[in-house]
Image (cartoon, rainbow over all chains, first blue to last red; front, side):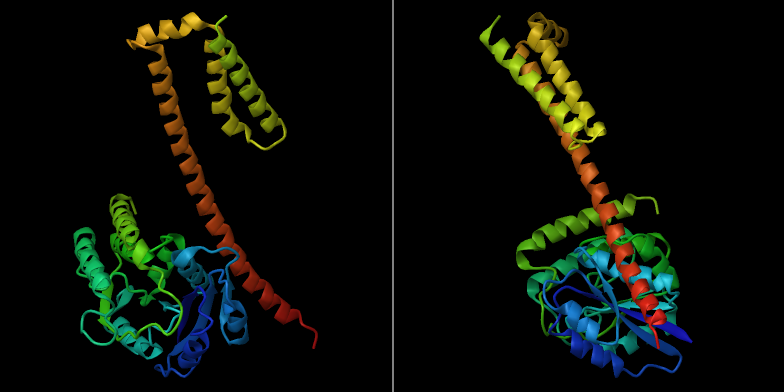
Length: 235
Length: 119
């Protein structure tokens, strides 16, 4: 029996949450997997908290806004505390279809990697996002190759599967804002195996991306710096 | 006594008094007051001892004493700002940890409430 915790960091996702949860409940996974869903409410200003309370989920209700990294880490801490075997981070806006979870788990079973990333770019299908965003992702691919020596195409993807080792490490240290590319450097330095598997993503059904155009320059600078410091920091 | 000397003496002594009062009222922590007390102390000393500034300037080879004052005060302000950024980073880290602990504890409490609910 494997216990999986689905971590859904939410900031103002009242519109898309109910459908996502019902999709997750209807999801058919192999017998040995036991799925629990955990919604992390990152101090939303809408009714996300009330909506989540009515659903059959574990609700981590943060008293202050910590940003996506802090929210995901809260979920990882819960997974560590309750001794889950696997944790999956999934966006609350419906960008990551629950059905794609099967591919992630299949990749985990096949490779035994500690971190599995759901990637939009290995096979080009589904929602591919805008040109500028793709440009940024190409840049991060190059940067990742430089810092980790691994070829990871979708380093900004927030669709990820953590095994026990990764949960433990992530609970101890996880970057605050724009955590995805930096955490890859961190995990790879700690010697974890990272694998990427193609998934199909859809256009967000509600809410707003944490990366908006006017902050994208800051995003690039901050993430580059964070990756650099993660690279030279002793693990 | 020069007019400017009188002004600096009044200003620096008033500043010293302000820092003192804030520490006494508990609005400024002692460890942060040290640098302010030290800095104001130096200001007061040099406002009284006008030859002193000239002496130190000659020692450093600075032509105009005013330049020495500017250079040193800007440098000290920069170092102190860096220190404050470090303090802010530390507070943010602690704040995050507390928020997470609290949220996880809320779940535990809810679970316990469920368990002790009367039948």
